[in-house]
Length: 293
Image (cartoon, rainbow, N blue to C red):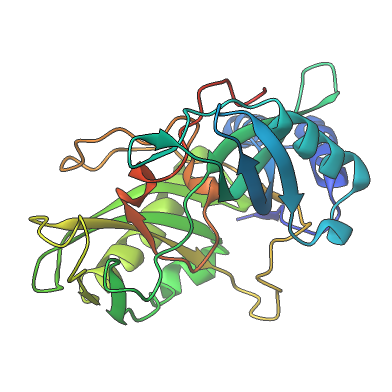
Protein backbone atom coordinates (compact mmCIF):
# COMPACT_ATOMS: atom_id res chain seq x y z
CA UNK A 1 0.00 0.00 0.00
CA UNK A 2 1.20 3.50 -0.80
CA UNK A 3 0.50 6.38 1.56
CA UNK A 4 1.54 9.94 0.94
CA UNK A 5 2.63 12.16 3.82
CA UNK A 6 1.32 15.71 3.33
CA UNK A 7 2.28 17.61 6.48
CA UNK A 8 5.20 19.97 6.49
CA UNK A 9 6.62 23.41 7.18
CA UNK A 10 6.79 24.67 3.62
CA UNK A 11 3.80 27.00 3.87
CA UNK A 12 1.53 27.44 0.90
CA UNK A 13 3.97 25.42 -1.21
CA UNK A 14 2.35 22.37 0.40
CA UNK A 15 -0.99 23.35 -1.09
CA UNK A 16 0.53 24.01 -4.50
CA UNK A 17 2.25 20.62 -4.48
CA UNK A 18 -1.07 19.00 -3.68
CA UNK A 19 -2.55 20.57 -6.78
CA UNK A 20 0.21 19.01 -8.86
CA UNK A 21 -0.05 15.72 -6.98
CA UNK A 22 -3.69 15.46 -7.91
CA UNK A 23 -2.72 15.05 -11.56
CA UNK A 24 -0.17 12.35 -10.69
CA UNK A 25 -2.27 10.37 -8.23
CA UNK A 26 -3.53 6.94 -9.19
CA UNK A 27 -6.95 7.02 -10.81
CA UNK A 28 -9.93 6.47 -8.56
CA UNK A 29 -10.64 7.33 -4.97
CA UNK A 30 -7.13 8.51 -4.05
CA UNK A 31 -7.37 11.37 -6.55
CA UNK A 32 -10.77 12.23 -5.15
CA UNK A 33 -9.34 12.29 -1.62
CA UNK A 34 -6.50 14.59 -2.68
CA UNK A 35 -9.05 17.00 -4.05
CA UNK A 36 -10.43 17.45 -0.52
CA UNK A 37 -7.08 18.45 1.01
CA UNK A 38 -6.82 21.68 2.97
CA UNK A 39 -3.97 23.54 4.60
CA UNK A 40 -4.60 25.34 7.87
CA UNK A 41 -2.68 27.84 9.94
CA UNK A 42 -3.61 28.64 13.54
CA UNK A 43 -2.98 32.28 14.42
CA UNK A 44 -3.43 33.30 18.06
CA UNK A 45 -3.47 36.65 19.77
CA UNK A 46 -5.74 39.15 21.50
CA UNK A 47 -8.56 41.34 20.25
CA UNK A 48 -9.68 44.61 21.87
CA UNK A 49 -13.42 45.26 21.70
CA UNK A 50 -15.00 48.63 22.48
CA UNK A 51 -18.32 49.36 24.18
CA UNK A 52 -20.15 49.55 20.84
CA UNK A 53 -18.80 46.15 19.73
CA UNK A 54 -16.25 47.53 17.28
CA UNK A 55 -12.64 46.35 17.24
CA UNK A 56 -9.99 48.87 18.26
CA UNK A 57 -6.89 46.67 18.22
CA UNK A 58 -5.69 43.25 17.04
CA UNK A 59 -2.52 41.91 18.65
CA UNK A 60 -0.96 38.76 17.15
CA UNK A 61 1.22 36.33 19.08
CA UNK A 62 4.62 35.44 17.64
CA UNK A 63 4.07 37.79 14.73
CA UNK A 64 7.66 37.36 13.55
CA UNK A 65 6.96 33.71 12.74
CA UNK A 66 4.10 34.69 10.44
CA UNK A 67 4.41 35.64 6.80
CA UNK A 68 3.88 39.44 6.64
CA UNK A 69 1.06 39.02 4.14
CA UNK A 70 -0.72 36.52 6.39
CA UNK A 71 -0.31 38.76 9.44
CA UNK A 72 -1.74 41.67 7.46
CA UNK A 73 -4.66 39.54 6.22
CA UNK A 74 -5.62 38.47 9.76
CA UNK A 75 -5.24 42.00 11.13
CA UNK A 76 -7.34 43.58 8.38
CA UNK A 77 -10.03 40.90 8.58
CA UNK A 78 -10.36 40.95 12.38
CA UNK A 79 -10.41 44.75 12.43
CA UNK A 80 -13.65 44.66 10.39
CA UNK A 81 -15.47 42.39 12.82
CA UNK A 82 -18.35 43.61 14.98
CA UNK A 83 -19.30 41.94 18.26
CA UNK A 84 -22.33 42.02 20.47
CA UNK A 85 -21.42 44.63 23.10
CA UNK A 86 -20.13 43.01 26.28
CA UNK A 87 -21.99 44.09 29.40
CA UNK A 88 -21.12 44.09 33.08
CA UNK A 89 -23.78 45.03 35.63
CA UNK A 90 -26.04 46.10 32.79
CA UNK A 91 -23.54 48.49 31.24
CA UNK A 92 -21.45 48.00 28.08
CA UNK A 93 -17.72 47.71 28.75
CA UNK A 94 -14.59 47.46 26.63
CA UNK A 95 -12.79 44.12 26.85
CA UNK A 96 -9.64 42.37 25.76
CA UNK A 97 -10.34 38.83 24.65
CA UNK A 98 -8.09 35.93 23.65
CA UNK A 99 -8.40 35.17 19.93
CA UNK A 100 -7.57 32.10 17.86
CA UNK A 101 -8.09 32.27 14.10
CA UNK A 102 -7.89 29.17 11.92
CA UNK A 103 -6.94 30.07 8.34
CA UNK A 104 -7.76 27.56 5.62
CA UNK A 105 -6.03 27.44 2.23
CA UNK A 106 -7.38 25.42 -0.69
CA UNK A 107 -6.49 25.12 -4.36
CA UNK A 108 -9.20 26.04 -6.84
CA UNK A 109 -9.80 24.16 -10.08
CA UNK A 110 -8.00 27.01 -11.85
CA UNK A 111 -4.91 26.35 -9.73
CA UNK A 112 -5.07 29.47 -7.58
CA UNK A 113 -4.66 29.36 -3.79
CA UNK A 114 -7.68 30.64 -1.86
CA UNK A 115 -7.25 31.65 1.80
CA UNK A 116 -10.19 32.17 4.13
CA UNK A 117 -10.97 32.25 7.83
CA UNK A 118 -12.26 28.77 8.56
CA UNK A 119 -13.03 29.19 12.25
CA UNK A 120 -12.46 31.31 15.33
CA UNK A 121 -12.41 30.90 19.07
CA UNK A 122 -12.60 33.71 21.63
CA UNK A 123 -12.35 31.64 24.80
CA UNK A 124 -9.10 30.27 26.16
CA UNK A 125 -8.41 26.79 27.56
CA UNK A 126 -9.67 25.81 31.00
CA UNK A 127 -7.66 27.40 33.79
CA UNK A 128 -6.80 26.22 37.32
CA UNK A 129 -9.56 28.17 39.08
CA UNK A 130 -12.37 26.58 41.10
CA UNK A 131 -14.85 27.83 38.47
CA UNK A 132 -13.28 25.66 35.78
CA UNK A 133 -13.03 21.95 35.19
CA UNK A 134 -9.50 20.63 35.72
CA UNK A 135 -7.55 17.55 34.74
CA UNK A 136 -6.91 14.85 37.31
CA UNK A 137 -5.85 11.82 35.25
CA UNK A 138 -5.75 12.16 31.46
CA UNK A 139 -3.35 9.58 30.05
CA UNK A 140 -2.34 10.05 26.41
CA UNK A 141 -4.07 7.59 24.01
CA UNK A 142 -1.96 4.62 22.93
CA UNK A 143 -1.02 4.63 19.25
CA UNK A 144 -2.81 1.62 17.70
CA UNK A 145 -0.23 -0.78 16.16
CA UNK A 146 -2.43 -1.24 13.10
CA UNK A 147 -2.59 2.54 12.63
CA UNK A 148 1.20 2.71 12.90
CA UNK A 149 1.53 -0.01 10.25
CA UNK A 150 -0.79 1.95 7.98
CA UNK A 151 1.15 5.18 8.54
CA UNK A 152 -1.93 6.88 9.98
CA UNK A 153 -1.36 10.33 11.46
CA UNK A 154 -3.77 13.08 12.38
CA UNK A 155 -5.75 14.73 15.14
CA UNK A 156 -8.94 13.60 16.87
CA UNK A 157 -11.16 16.30 18.38
CA UNK A 158 -12.95 14.72 21.35
CA UNK A 159 -16.12 15.87 23.10
CA UNK A 160 -16.05 14.44 26.62
CA UNK A 161 -19.00 14.41 29.03
CA UNK A 162 -17.95 14.59 32.70
CA UNK A 163 -20.21 13.66 35.64
CA UNK A 164 -20.30 15.40 39.06
CA UNK A 165 -17.95 12.74 40.46
CA UNK A 166 -15.35 13.66 37.82
CA UNK A 167 -15.72 10.48 35.78
CA UNK A 168 -16.32 10.33 32.03
CA UNK A 169 -19.85 9.24 31.15
CA UNK A 170 -19.70 9.60 27.37
CA UNK A 171 -17.25 10.49 24.59
CA UNK A 172 -17.74 11.47 20.95
CA UNK A 173 -15.06 12.00 18.31
CA UNK A 174 -16.32 15.29 16.92
CA UNK A 175 -13.92 15.29 13.96
CA UNK A 176 -10.86 13.36 12.77
CA UNK A 177 -8.45 15.10 10.37
CA UNK A 178 -5.74 12.97 8.72
CA UNK A 179 -2.36 14.14 7.44
CA UNK A 180 -1.82 11.20 5.08
CA UNK A 181 -3.47 10.31 1.79
CA UNK A 182 -4.77 6.88 0.85
CA UNK A 183 -7.95 5.50 -0.65
CA UNK A 184 -11.26 6.53 0.90
CA UNK A 185 -11.69 3.05 2.37
CA UNK A 186 -8.20 3.03 3.90
CA UNK A 187 -8.61 6.50 5.34
CA UNK A 188 -11.94 5.54 6.86
CA UNK A 189 -10.18 2.65 8.58
CA UNK A 190 -7.46 5.02 9.84
CA UNK A 191 -10.09 7.33 11.30
CA UNK A 192 -11.77 4.39 13.00
CA UNK A 193 -8.52 3.19 14.56
CA UNK A 194 -7.55 6.62 15.89
CA UNK A 195 -11.11 7.23 17.12
CA UNK A 196 -11.27 3.92 19.00
CA UNK A 197 -7.89 4.56 20.65
CA UNK A 198 -8.85 8.10 21.66
CA UNK A 199 -12.25 7.17 23.06
CA UNK A 200 -10.81 4.16 24.91
CA UNK A 201 -8.27 6.41 26.66
CA UNK A 202 -10.80 9.17 27.36
CA UNK A 203 -13.21 6.81 29.11
CA UNK A 204 -10.53 6.25 31.77
CA UNK A 205 -9.89 9.95 32.35
CA UNK A 206 -10.93 11.72 35.55
CA UNK A 207 -11.42 15.41 36.25
CA UNK A 208 -11.97 17.86 39.07
CA UNK A 209 -15.34 19.54 38.43
CA UNK A 210 -15.87 23.24 39.19
CA UNK A 211 -16.78 23.93 42.82
CA UNK A 212 -17.80 27.57 42.48
CA UNK A 213 -19.18 29.91 39.85
CA UNK A 214 -22.19 29.59 37.52
CA UNK A 215 -21.24 26.10 36.27
CA UNK A 216 -20.72 24.49 39.70
CA UNK A 217 -24.25 23.04 39.96
CA UNK A 218 -24.51 21.73 36.41
CA UNK A 219 -25.70 18.09 36.06
CA UNK A 220 -22.64 17.41 33.88
CA UNK A 221 -19.92 19.24 31.97
CA UNK A 222 -18.55 18.87 28.47
CA UNK A 223 -14.94 19.49 27.53
CA UNK A 224 -13.21 19.49 24.16
CA UNK A 225 -9.82 17.79 24.02
CA UNK A 226 -7.72 17.56 20.82
CA UNK A 227 -5.74 14.28 20.70
CA UNK A 228 -2.86 14.30 18.21
CA UNK A 229 -1.19 11.25 16.70
CA UNK A 230 2.30 11.86 15.29
CA UNK A 231 4.62 9.02 14.21
CA UNK A 232 7.76 11.17 14.23
CA UNK A 233 8.09 12.26 17.86
CA UNK A 234 10.81 14.71 16.85
CA UNK A 235 8.23 16.85 15.07
CA UNK A 236 7.81 20.22 16.76
CA UNK A 237 4.20 20.37 18.04
CA UNK A 238 4.30 24.18 17.99
CA UNK A 239 1.84 25.34 15.33
CA UNK A 240 2.69 29.04 15.36
CA UNK A 241 3.55 30.19 11.85
CA UNK A 242 3.28 26.72 10.35
CA UNK A 243 0.82 25.56 7.72
CA UNK A 244 -0.49 22.02 8.20
CA UNK A 245 -2.04 20.13 5.31
CA UNK A 246 -4.70 17.53 6.03
CA UNK A 247 -7.78 15.74 4.77
CA UNK A 248 -10.69 16.97 6.94
CA UNK A 249 -13.06 14.37 8.29
CA UNK A 250 -16.82 14.74 8.72
CA UNK A 251 -17.97 16.58 11.82
CA UNK A 252 -20.57 15.10 14.14
CA UNK A 253 -22.39 16.51 17.14
CA UNK A 254 -22.61 14.95 20.59
CA UNK A 255 -26.25 13.92 21.27
CA UNK A 256 -26.23 15.45 24.76
CA UNK A 257 -25.17 18.95 23.62
CA UNK A 258 -28.12 21.34 23.60
CA UNK A 259 -26.46 24.71 23.08
CA UNK A 260 -25.15 25.71 19.70
CA UNK A 261 -21.49 26.60 19.28
CA UNK A 262 -20.54 30.25 19.19
CA UNK A 263 -20.81 31.86 15.72
CA UNK A 264 -17.79 30.99 13.59
CA UNK A 265 -16.43 28.35 15.99
CA UNK A 266 -14.40 25.47 14.57
CA UNK A 267 -12.54 22.67 16.44
CA UNK A 268 -9.50 23.51 14.28
CA UNK A 269 -9.22 26.79 16.19
CA UNK A 270 -8.24 24.89 19.36
CA UNK A 271 -4.61 24.41 20.33
CA UNK A 272 -3.30 20.84 20.50
CA UNK A 273 -3.17 19.42 24.01
CA UNK A 274 -5.58 21.96 25.45
CA UNK A 275 -8.67 21.37 27.58
CA UNK A 276 -11.65 23.51 26.59
CA UNK A 277 -14.78 23.73 28.69
CA UNK A 278 -17.89 23.86 26.52
CA UNK A 279 -20.15 26.58 27.86
CA UNK A 280 -17.29 28.80 28.92
CA UNK A 281 -17.69 30.49 25.56
CA UNK A 282 -21.01 31.89 26.85
CA UNK A 283 -18.87 34.54 28.52
CA UNK A 284 -16.80 35.07 25.40
CA UNK A 285 -17.50 37.92 22.96
CA UNK A 286 -20.13 36.99 20.36
CA UNK A 287 -19.24 37.73 16.77
CA UNK A 288 -22.04 39.34 14.75
CA UNK A 289 -20.40 39.79 11.35
CA UNK A 290 -19.28 37.11 8.88
CA UNK A 291 -15.81 35.58 9.42
CA UNK A 292 -14.52 37.32 6.32
CA UNK A 293 -15.30 40.72 7.82
